[in-house]
Image 1 (cartoon, rainbow, N blue to C red):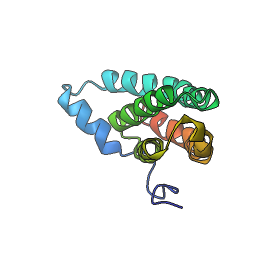
Image 2: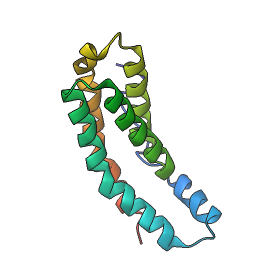
Image 3: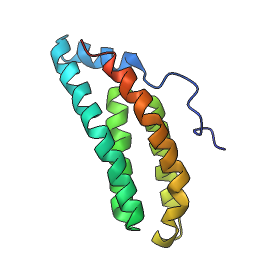
Image 4: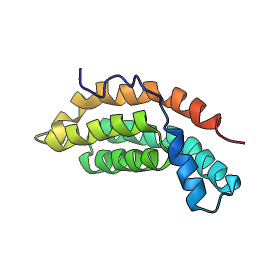
Length: 126
């Protein structure tokens, strides 16, 4: 197990969205739309990761994990960001695409984080 295997802290750092709202002039509607967009795209991003793994497409796997990592960072989804970061590192350490299926357990951890992250972010929407 690695340091990212269990996200024992909060799934979401709510200060990230508060700071973003302050930077954008305090309009909560903008943040709500931003969060809704992330939440609606999260299942697609994770399923894209699965498809890329199934196809042994290392470039698409990397693109999918980077998309997941950066979007999670932007909304403060700290657990999802940590899991995506660990997966990115693992991808970079693979000798070639033939070993991508070895990463399936890490992707399954990401799957397990989706519901809680979604629920916690949705609780922030006004």
